[in-house]
Structures are given as C-alpha cells and as structure tokens.
Amino acid sequence: MKKVTVIDYLIERLHEIGVDDIFGVPGDYNLSFLDDVEKSSSVNWIGDCNELNAAYAADGYARKKGVGALITTFDVGELSAINGIAGSYAEHIPVIAITGAPTTKVQENKKLMHHTDATGNFKRSYRAYKQFTETQALLGFENAGAEIDRALTTAIIKRRPVYISLPLDVAHSMIDAPSAPLNLTVQNTDHNKRVAQRLVDELKKAKRPVILAGNEIMTFRAKAEFEKLINQTHVPVATMLLGKSSINEENPYFIGTYYPNYGDKRALNYVDQSDLVIVFGSKLIDVNTGSFTQCFTQKETVVLNCDNTDFFGEKSRGVNINNLIKNLENFDYQFDFESTGLNNVTPDVKYEDNDDQELNLSQYMYAFKNFMKPDDTIYTETGTSQYGLSFMNLKKGVDFEAQPLWGSIGYTLPAVLGSQIADPEGRHILSIGDGSAQMTIQELSLIQRHHLKPIIFLVDNDGYTIERVIHGAHAKYNDIAVWDYTKIPAAMGITEDTMDVNVATNKQEMLAIMDKIADDRSKAHFVILKTKALDAPELVKKIGKSMSLIDKSHFYGEE
Image (cartoon, one colour):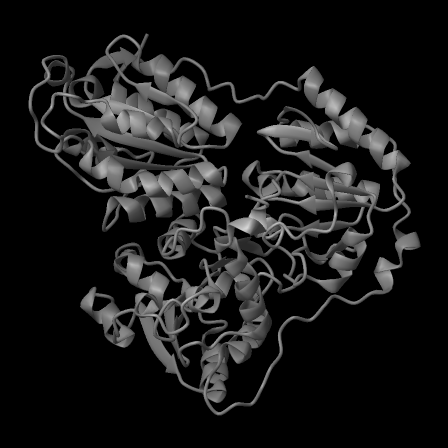
C-alpha cells in the first residue's frame, strides 16, 4: 500500500471533493504543512488579510464550487475565523475549517504555549467550533485518514461546515494513501419517500397550492432538478429572500419574490389566498416572513428542510432535498396553472427612476436592474443593497447571493472574491455600502494578487443607512469615519491596469460609467457612488420601519 503524509492525504481528499483553492493565513502552528500545500499540484494557496476574511472567501467559493476550505493557526487564528464559519453553518454552506495545532506531546504535557490562554487547556477552540460545525475531527496518528474521510463526507452530505484539528507532528506522519473515492451517496430513506407521498397527497387535495423556494435548493446543488420538477408539476413558485435565485426567474411558473407587505404583488396576492403553502428548502424565519407578518397560518403550511419536516404543525425529522425532489418526480401530478390567471399578470415593478440632480439610490437600483446580464453572479451586502435589490426580477442563469439569515456585515466583499476565484470566467458584481466595506475592504488586495475582475459598486453615504432607517436616524453610533475610497486601491498596490476607479455624483455620470464598464472584462472595476446620508429607496424605508418592531417584545407575543 502506498504511503503518504497526513497533510498530503488531506490535500488529495480536498481536491477529490472539488477544492482547488485553499484560503487562509499562515501561523506558527501551520507553517510547516503549508509548505506541502504550496508544493501541491492539486490545490492553490490563497493568502488572505485575516482569518475572518478567509472564512468569508471560502464561503463564497463554496457557494459557487460546492465546497470550500481554509487553514488557520491554533486558537488566535481559528477564533478569528469562527464568525465566518458560523454564517456558513446557519446558511448551509460546506466549508472545511482546518486548524494547525501544537504537537500531540505539547498538548498531552499541557505545556504553556503562545497563542493559548496558558492554562494547559487545548480544547477551548474545539469546544467553540462544536457549536457551529456539523462534526469535528481531532486528528491523531491512528485515526487521521478515517477521520478526514468522515469529516469531508459529512460536510458534503449535510452541506454544513466541519472542523479538522491537525497537530504539526500528525501532519507529517505517514499513513496509507486513499484506496477508493469517498462515498458521497445519500441514502434515499423510507422517511424521505413517505414525505414525498404525503406531499403529493396534499397537492392533489389543494385548490391553490404554492411553493416558497428556499436556500437549500441552491446549497444542496439542486436548482436544475428543482426547476425540472416545477416544469413537470406546474405548481406556482415564489422565492423567499433566503432563497432568491433558487429557480430561474424567467420560468413561466415563477410568480415573484415573496415578502409580506413589500414583495411582488402577484406573489403576495396568490400566497395569501393559498390553501397549501409549501416552504421548500427553507424555514419561516423573520427575514423570510417580513418579521413574521405572513398571512398564511399553520393549518395551510408544510415546511420541508434538512433539519425538520412540519405538516400543519406535525413535526418530524428533516429530509434530503435532492432525494425528495427525485421521489416527487416519480408521481403523476400536474396542477392547472392556467386556472389561476397568473400567466396574465405582469411582474411587479419595484424600482422607480427619477431625474434628481444629486445621485440617489432609487436611480442606482433602477439602473442596476438594467445593468444585470444573464448568468451574472450578484452579491448584495446585508442592509440597503440586499433589501433594495432583492426584488429585482432576475435574468436567466443569474446567481443572487446574500447572507440574509446570518447577516454579518462586510461578508460579501471577501465572499464575491472567493466566488470569482471559483469561477474566474464569470461576471461577478458586488453592491455594498460604505459601512460594510470598511469591515473587510483590505481583502481587495486579492484582486491584484490573483488577477480577479469583479465589478464593485460602493455606496458612499456616510454611515449605516439600513440601521438609520430602522432606528437612530441621526445617532452617532450609526456614523462611520470618512474615507477617500478612490485612494484605497493604490494604497494596496492595485495598479490601473488591474482595476479602474470611477466616481459618480449624479445619474448621468453613473450611467456613463455603467455603459463604459458593462462589457469590459479586461480588469476589475471599482465604482464609488456618492449619495446623501439617509438616502434610501421608499421600499427600503418601509421595510426598515417594519423591522424596527423587532425591538418591541410585545411584537412576538411576549408578556
């Protein structure tokens, strides 16, 4: 049997499941095995500015490629990354979080080491990661290969992050090379089959069924199969905010983006009168329900996701989305879509143009809708960009990415760069505000280092606008430092040949810039949009006002 080092075994398995690039930051407890990563012909090392950015970038990479990975150092590095991993856990993104750990002898002897709290306790970060990963693997001399296989298989099947702790001495120990590919097949259980049968039975009884499509359709890589199912059954489908672009929005059975009070009217009117609402691959969380203001009740609702199944309040364990779709395709059922009259209703238009002298976000969002092209990957940052642009009707093939559930501001800038590394030929567009950008803007340096070509629209409007419209319009805590964003790329060593920088202060300037860069794939584009503080489209202001109710305990029925 061929022998390899544990780190080479791990690299080979990562490459096998689709990881060609590993993000991270070097540190004392991973340096020696990072040499092996750099020498490998199977993976590329992507050095990030900090561990949190590496976790965000690995998340974006995984959304595009199917799985991502990062390497950090012990305690100080891995704890910096944990917020990014927690977001991946919440939104079902499989990221392999690998940490370089002190040698087994150091840990056994409880040596008081740097990058620790000097108590001899080497399990604190491991215990923290237990809260935000699907499984954890502490690699040793006897179990390394089997534990790597178990962790990676779990990540792919469960579509959630996993944690691998790799001590330095274990990393360079010799084990048997992989003898066969990983078995990533998910068993089609009797439970999954029973759920499919019951769902079809309920569909046959329903007069006005609707599917609310969620994020698991994307994270479980089931978009094509889901659309095939919709084309087969003709059931009207709307997307939720946590699930935007889970179906081609040019599909004839797509009726809009559902969000109570403010979503597409066609979707709202139909869903509110439906006698069977199927939440498919998502959950009834606040960002999907307009802060729990949906009109449908438990007696009309079926919820199906990987964590749980709920038929009208009767709960059971979750389902595998891929196998559920396969099971449903075997049934002979088709809804009379034409009877709804939905095919005669035009999509709701949420974006209004204006000719104000100063640039404003209504003008920008109207123009963004027209700037979009088929097959784009669009990232919208938590806040004004996400809530403002989530109601666009997307063109065919567009991937619309955001982080509406975890909502960590600054996430999208490293994430869109990770996504572009996974898909270098695709057109990747980011819309982000100045408050969020200041969190992670140092990661722009990846653009020069790895020849990336994203289009970044940065809204410079002096602060946290989404927070201002929710609460504290003029509060100092919603202010941020004033930066000259035009000088940041040069300060990071980004040359004019790699990225051009443009500033728009009015509508005409913005449209001219958009026209100039739309088809230019020779370089990255950084567009700074100067608008006034408190500028937000009416739609965002209304959503912000409704979100302010979250701070009132009586809104949730508490005493």
